[in-house]
Image 1 (cartoon, helix red, strand yellow):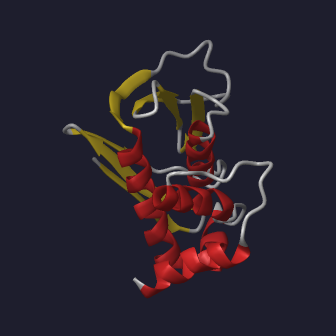
Image 2 (cartoon, one colour; image 1 turned 90 degrees about the vertical axis):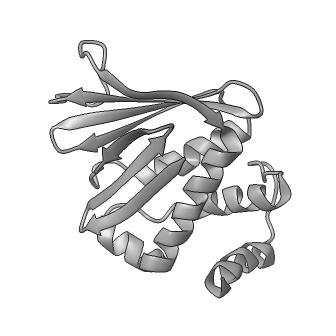
Length: 178
């Protein structure tokens, strides 16, 4: 499995996901907080707030719908559907989409790939640079820290728990020192 996400210019990102020899290339615009929505969805699935998460990314003349279903603690179903010439990105009822990827994977493997890419985004662009390139969206720092902490401890801080700033800064410091 491979996941790539790069900021390609002011307001745009490029990337791809490759799973079991299937590859889907994407280029979401600043209209949607694509990477932030992705990280927040993974956190939601981890905390069992939801077993199903759907993201909609706006691209030039098309929309991309990502559907994640957590089937059990270990398995994540990923379905990516593309909708051509989207008039209303959030009203899919009258549109016929084409499913480009519909596959199961280990949930932990997908989290590791996305977090690895988040590490790269931070190291390449910085927190402020990420914001400057996307214009409207901040780097999803809290979701990123929750996912990093989960990979380390196999537990996730929930909404009603306090966090430890020293530990959060330690996570960021460790990234810089790698």
